[in-house]
Length: 425
Image: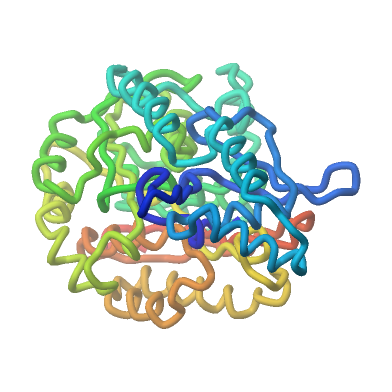
């Protein structure tokens, strides 16, 4: 479900003139599902503080959307009474609901912040980022995982010749099973490549401050540990300065990098490569204005470090952009079903892909600004970053599709694309 209307920047459970003004957590994910014929809203918590499988009824979710730090408890009481046609609701009832939400770690309260600090400190002290989705999104057993990835790679229907020097690859980060065919189309393009360093740039779904989130941790999956190029990560940290997130906690449960890494480890099992993991935050909230000029002005030094990697004689560097495109339908906050929005969303996605593969940064930004992100393209910042670090090269769209989820009448756009040296097809 779209989080824009809940993704505020007002801190903690605030108090104005003595009145408590509760704030819902901005990092929770709300998923509408059906259980025993009844609609409920499933809550996913990247921190694991909210119990696994906890859900709320739609009317409570609607109440939670009002918890933006601007409404006092009395405001909430009046709004609930209005919605119920004037039926009396006491202030004690509102306080009880809010107290229960706080007890369940759903509010951005002092209790939640204390628990979060402890989790962040524990993660920060670790040297290895352990796999977060193994055993859930993909097999945990190494042999089973290799076989599973082989089966995925065999699903590609692409007849494009496999090049030997791919500079950059665009791949989905959608659920691996749902997006299997597009993952296969993308990763079969790397069969003849031999990178010694891979820069994986992914959508940072939990990046709350800064344009980018870096980590110096090595990454572990069932297929082994891939070492971090800590020297380069340090250079990026220094070049990025204040636009880099204050900590690396957003990496803890993020799947955008993890999903790409298992394919890379599988394909390059006999080769050694290092990884530079970069999560890209929201440019809508992270820039003084939503424009390419504002992005280049703020991120210029950071982008130059990445761009110079292409010319580094000591490494063959591969860039992987882990992105999805439009997210449409009720699951993502739209009033209408995905079928109704499909034509417009596909046209927008395909326009972005064309600008990307044509290396047309201005057109890419203008297309996004024209739509005002109404289709929730979660990979925009990652693609925008890729656009401004690529050298003169050939871009090619390999596959695009809108992956439907009938149960929620929603859909996600996913794609595969590659960039090769200008003298290659």
